[in-house]
Length: 204
Image 1 (cartoon, rainbow, N blue to C red):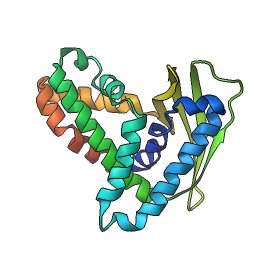
Image 2: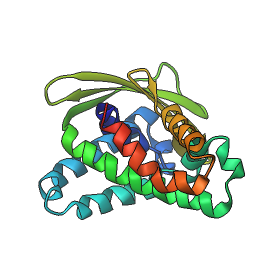
Image 3: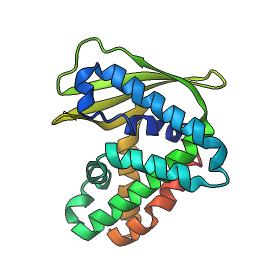
Image 4: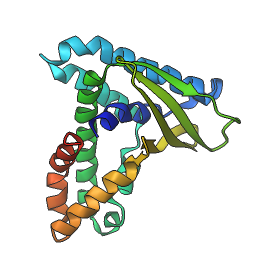
């Protein structure tokens, strides 16, 4: 699972803004992926002594390009409807902080060598599935796929599949299981979700 975490952030940061209209979706994704690689490589040496710098940089990227409201709704699933606004916002903040920290740590350790976008067979309209091949420093290769949808002028990541594992469904299943084991206490689940998610990610 740690391997999956270490590549998942690449998908979260490729939400395209209006500049994507000036170039192909694949080219834009490639550029954004390369930018993240550069950011991590330049911040890796300082990360151990002062992780706050890279956390801040990654947080800024995610805040600009990730729709945490949609992610929150998807992960909470059926429980989103019964949660009050304060609980939804609390989980959204918990999710945001968790993703920033765990994926930054994973990317620092991952040390990927290259990311190659597999060209689309036809130009995208409002939806597209982008596949990429990630090569690590030890030449291990992973094939990844993610679904994107266009909202106004922005391309947003909606789901990710890594080595056959659907990440959106994984987090949703985890949230649902915690709701069952905690007698549907939303506050308790939100309070403990990040710790439980972290333990599961790094135990596999």
